[in-house]
Image 1 (cartoon, rainbow, N blue to C red):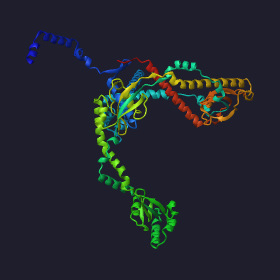
Image 2: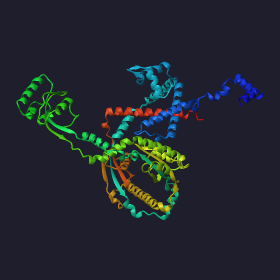
Image 3: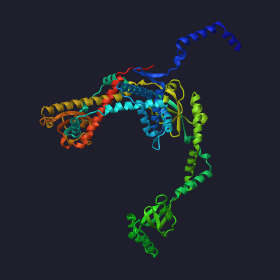
Length: 620
């Protein structure tokens, strides 16, 4: 073969190819041949400026890691990768638009400015001083960038933040506007309500079969059976591989003795006399010590001499305590005493104590026969970690290569279960896990018949599933939903009749008639005086209506109606109480600043959207 290559290389065709290559390189250079491979792939251009694939993928990875870090139990299967990619790309487009605008305005940072910022950043410092090794490590490990790339990213961030803060801090709100808003917040209203219930129009409500059929035809989208699947699944848990039978009696006995020692907590009741440090402390200590030696009563001496006011009245008794609660010196002395004994002077951080042991008690420990089963199960779970990891790996491999779940379940001795009616929105566990649902309804699993990946749905609980049967969304027949439609139409007609009756009452009251003159009304007015916007004693819909009605003029009430869950309420607004004299100057200043900040944020958002709308964005 090698000889054939040598022979052909001397032929006419080979010589022509070599001549063509030489001519191409001499005229156009190497880029004419391989130039297409030297450029970095791009994901978009913004006004002609590229967003490279490398930059895009780096930010996608950082955003994914950020979202995982916010989860209580990080689970990559819960991440919506498509959503992250869309949001990251749009964020990079927005960033590029802002930096281009900043450049057009002449806003830029010099290399010296960047150097100054970097050296002042605390994450790059050791012992309060900039450290180049620390800088290199943090940039590479935490940011996943090269030094030049980080410097440019920092330059962009600072410029964008400068624009944002400049526009956001320019927000302004007139003092009159803040005063008006604060006055509205403190405003109260006096109004009356007249409740009209469904019972008042029940005899007038009628729904025919034709009404039901017409509603069904006009609203078929409301009466769809949701898409569901019947899913087969295998659950693997730590408890499933834990085998209490593998735990020996000796191991149970050893753990019981450990547990019994912990449970047999000895508590000691002591009394003490505390002498605080001071000029007279030594004399007082000597005096108390002498009186104790003379046999005087400890409790009486505590009442006289102890600085611990809380216990002195009880003869110094501080009750029962175990280890780890008192000062170490006090505790050591307490556990060295026999009942009735009194210690000599004991120094602690609080002063000097004389301690008397009053009593000793120990917690009763259940017998081995009572605790054995729980201890055996506990030990089995502790030792099941390695077995669980192996079983998890085996199940993942077996389910990946199998075209069913029966074989993997049989191989590992696990139960194959089935769940009906699993929708895209989920259901009972384990199908309340977003990652498992996403895979179950993926194209590979739903349409191609593959098993899902092994998904961790909880602590030491993993599930693999497959679709046994798929039920597409379907129209529900009329006879199944007739009752629901009838109830809906009855409710609608009831509200229409109540609204009409409320309008009749409002028209009569507006024309000058009183409630007593209206024969069709049996209810009475309920008064609500000086109600604010957050009144908890009145239905929110009624309060909202009362505060949306125009101010009464010339003492004449203004009428309106509000719909509630139980019916319709006629509202008579009698007075508006502005309470402007109660405006606090400090609160007014704070409100003005808050409103100015909001205004600045709105202006920045509008500016940003303007730039985005006018940018030319192209995607390959």
